[in-house]
Image (cartoon, rainbow, N blue to C red; front, top):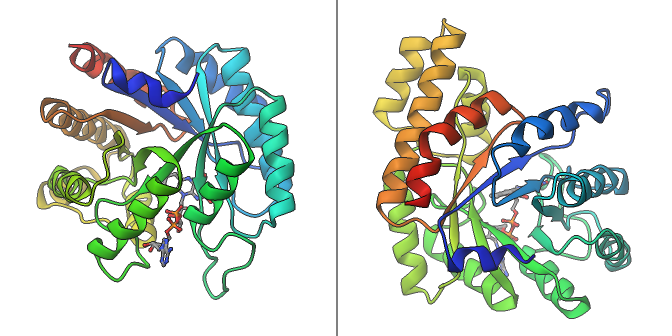
Length: 287
Ligand code: FAD
């Protein structure tokens, strides 16, 4: 099933997982999926560590299992950085053979101190290429607080429109902790003529280090009530985890009340967190 069809009837609730580190067994992700399966998300997306066909194999194997073994729709991420057109063609063939219908097409991060390599300088180039090749449903990433390389939010939204015009029929946002950025972004998208469903990406905080990394990587704004929460609980891991879950639930309740198209939960392969959030919000999202 093409995940874009889901938005016609409901507020979607989807998850993101990532393949285990190379030093860990692939079974660790299956133990996670055994638990996530019971929550019946609308779809599960699987990340892809940019730059290598070994990474594609793990993403493909997990996305295929989600679809065929767990009977949940899956989305395979595909960052084009470092890949040639021939590489992408071969990966698309493998996705097709595995019955994958949905691809999150990305540029990928340029490694620090390095420069761009590959045939796809922007995600829109990859989207056009995939669209020409086959009938995949294509999803793209978007950034309520602007991508870190952007001049400003307006130029970023202009480039986002190029991705949608190239064939992206659904968007998933970068994580954010202040819903007001999302609302302003959504309004600007609408004014720019972007009318595809936008899922809000929500990441529950589990520790201070994780957030410091995210802020450096994504440049997201931390509201005062969020930093107060981190300061209050930083030395108590369980309290921090519970507060992080409560904060994410609060964000989702507000987003749902304001008519969000869907919630994409960055599960960090942690079924406990996904379960707690599911329990709190699944009836609200279905209401
Ligand atoms: P683009 O859309 O190409 O944008 C990158 C920058 O270029 C932006 O500043 C944009 O404004 C600018 N730009 C875009 N088009 C043009 C143009 N035509 N001319 C000039 N400038 C332009 N990374 C991974 O490696 N693996 C993953 O699995 C993964 N999953 C992700 C999932 C989500 C939901 C999100 C939000 C991000 C994910 N990322 C992943 C990270 C992503 O690869 C990085 O954020 C990357 O730096 C940008 O990717 P993009 O597809 O948004 O790029």
